Length: 295
Image 1 (cartoon, rainbow, N blue to C red):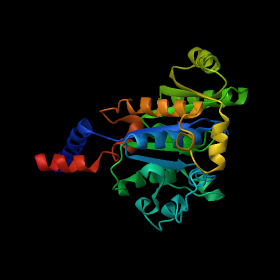
Image 2 (cartoon, rainbow, N blue to C red):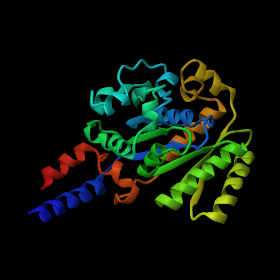
Image 3 (cartoon, helix red, strand yellow):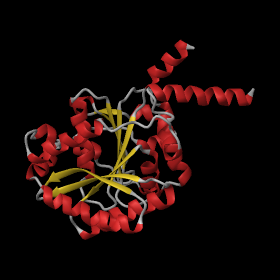
């Protein structure tokens, strides 16, 4: 009976996955200050404007800033979920264009020092979510902590934001090295941010690939070159994203193009390995109902 039950669950999961599932993108960078939160939020809102159901998880658990950047007032956050005071669905707030935000806490040392079990528990807390979403964007913390690595492993696409600074390139390489060598994550999408020209973005990408091709078995793809644009700073000061505040600015056009491109990235049809934590849960619930109805 136990074997039959396990087989039924596994076969049911495979049938559900073949129909539809949520796209999970982790936005990370290694070094702080490279603009990954800006990239994540602008992508989210650009996707939402095109009719996608989008959720952003602020996974910078000790220094959260997604809600601040959008001017949102939040009550409870992820620290309350981990304390057992509420479920994940109870802390979701709505941002611009219907984007759903899962806020984290700021200035809480305990949240920045979670155990591995708490990392997994947080990821599995998604089992309580009932929202049907097309895209989940995970905005990680700076550095290469266990939490950053956990969310990067759990995503279908890892978006690495890099600036043309030696420390940014070094930290991005360090993250790619750990994920590829220790966790078998082999595909990375690179965003060259705050570059002065497309050529500078290509040169930045070349600097990174020269090192990774020599020492790592990793596949890097340059997916966007986002120009240095003062409109981004102006939008941040107004607690808005640039694609909303200045939709025709150079950075806004590049962010929108990246968001459109990301929507076309395929969702793996066979959840396995580092995808299992998110993919097993983030299957659209109406699909599960359709599968049950057909059996």
